Length: 166
Length: 141
Image 1 (cartoon, rainbow over the protein chains, first blue to last red):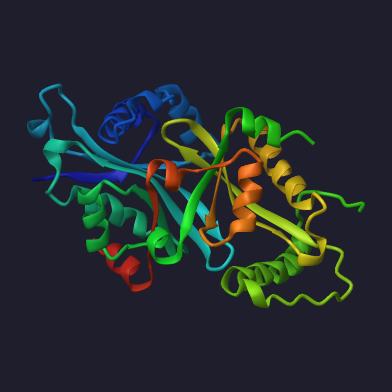
Image 2: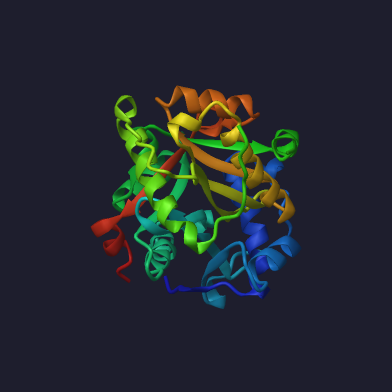
């Protein structure tokens, strides 16, 4: 199947917002999505963006029955490892179910791998998500939670406000 | 003990590089850390960057938090982390994320006491990485 991979622009935010909700449903936590199309426009396409996007598109003749031609995306931002330097963090990678198995996910991820000067690509995967885990392992990724014992930690809501008190 | 917390400037990089190495030693061989006092006044640091959650929006990621061993237990680590939280909230962030090694009980206890929680344990998130030859190979079109 013919498809193209390109940098996201601000007009893609409507479809990215749609696919973020689809990904959250896949991860079984659709209620957790608070980010809106407008948030994406402001946070991803202003002077100091918090993230960057990549979109996978198919030609009109392959559009979904709802009429979508933007059928996959990746969100990423630049990060830093104090040991190895510049890195990239892949926040989301998603391809609509009917377009999987055609190399689109790999092509999206491959585009991230080209980011200049970065020598690490980091991301997270849910432990029950075997098909994604198998895909990532096949791409030469490894699990640093299993291998090195890293646990992801978070502080949010009232606890974060309390922590910020001087 | 009197101490101050401030944003780093470029002149701090020498001490930050030193403390990064000290932190790396701690994370690999916790029992064997030896730190000599050679007149350093910069005795702790935090590194952070802005990040993003596609569900909840702007976030802040704390890459490193370190206080030299002889200065621990005095509230300096909390003050550094508090500053990161303040900066995050000021920028519209609603999450502070970081990682901790599973054997690092004293750090884990500290973070839990600050109201943090473990999303690897709670939600099953695993950290994944691609680097070196595998990353170069992945980048092939």
